[in-house]
Amino acid sequence: MRKILLICCSVLWLGAGTTALHGQGWGVFVSAGMGSYRMDEMKYLLEAIMDTYPVEARVISSFPPYTSTSAGFIKRFYPHLKAGAAYGFATSGSKADYSDYSGSVRTTIDAVSNKFGVFGTYTPLESERLEFSLIGRVDVNMTRMDVSSYLVAAGYSNGVNNKYRSVNPQLSAFAELLVHFGKLSLGVEGGFLADVPGKLKGTGNGQDLTDPADNRTILTSDWTGWRAGIKGILWIDTPDR
Amino acid sequence: MRSLLLILLTAVLLVLGSCFYNESGIYYVEPLPGDPPSFSVTTSLDTLTDPEINDSLEVRYEVTIENGEFYLMEAYLSDAGLYYSDSIQNSFWVYSDDAPFPGPDSLLMVFYYSTNSNSLADLINLEANVVRKTYGIQFNGGNTP
Image (spheres, chains in turn brown, cyan):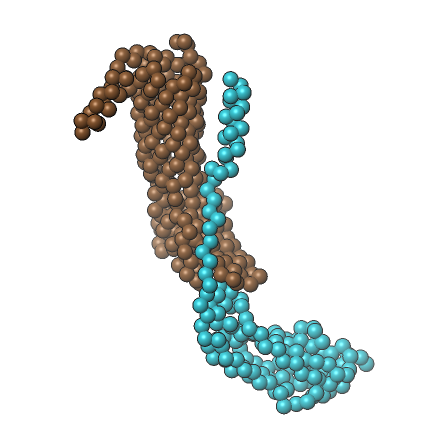
């Protein structure tokens, strides 16, 4: 406990007396990392599709943590407040498969998230070298969900591929720790994203993706989960220097 | 500055492909076969030797199968398709004008039935054991005037 207190005091001391040590104007940033994705209803859909197989298939993967990236620009408005706009990309998916000498049957669900949003950053701690910030972000997220099933056996093949989309808002809260190297800031960030599940609608015929057991229930995408990654900011305009 | 941006963009483009989710794993299974099917077939031609066809001949066949399923029978006359059955055992007719020329010919009957291997192809009725039976037939009429 004493150690933790000591570390906290040290960080506060580092942050103390930091007026405008980093008086950068604006910059561009890129962050790349991993995200976990809830996707409960898509996991359920995969299981429901597997139940229709003539054989006992196995889930190879089911929306594992996968790529989550973001890029955008950031502008400092006040010593401790920054804001910006960003594009974000995330992807994951799932797969069920059965293969034997005579053929295979598999279903894949590929999910891609493209989002655009704005964010605000509050920097409670900042020194010449280090910066610790809290970030709140609001996005409009567009999900693309491809659901494909294929069967190949004894020279016979059959398959179906359906594409669905959804649009929904997302809220996220992050914390980041940056180290400054002149015009370049590098660091790590992590946080939680809360997604308002988006109802999936077919891109071709516009038909909703419904629950196989109840066609009145429309299935949704859900990108809710933890995010973590590395981040780099290139400060373009440095008026205070 | 420009070169730095260019390097960043190039790096982003290079890693873009790996950003997309891709799962290449498979679940490979060695199916456990059931008891092998016991299959036998008799036809009305079994007791005849080179039967003569002046006008027509009915060929009857009867299949007995255990631990399996009879799928279909195909009949060929001189490598040309003559008759295709469904899974119902039946009979078919051979007419004198089915042969291009009068004279001796051969009737090939191919029987397909399940393997009971419990493989994917077996479970969707796409994998079959095959039994072939060939009979000599004498066409007295044929298509030639």
